[in-house]
Image (cartoon, rainbow, N blue to C red):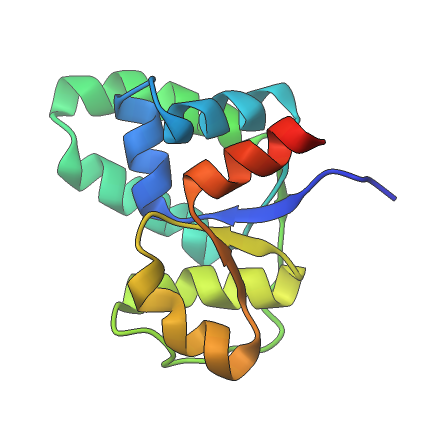
Length: 140
């Protein structure tokens, strides 16, 4: 069994990490590519990644980053959603993250802790900011 930290990366962390290489989010993308964390993704969350990035980036930037996203998705543990806890978050996209994390027994890594408070309280969802994850990785 792997001793890697099991995580689900929220779309906001992915977007920031791919577009601004400095900072915690960029380090998380590098750690993902290097296999230093065990990233879990459901099919729905993978589609959410594509949808959000393709809408928020310019066509040229999306074309370049699509290759990086494809590489990242080769380094994930695809998680089947056996049970859904929806609706739990005010943002339906966050419910995809919650479902994946709960089914994968993983920590949600997000810059938007507020939208995960109900799931944290009611479901016992584990949530960390990107900076908290970087600190945890540095301590290991």
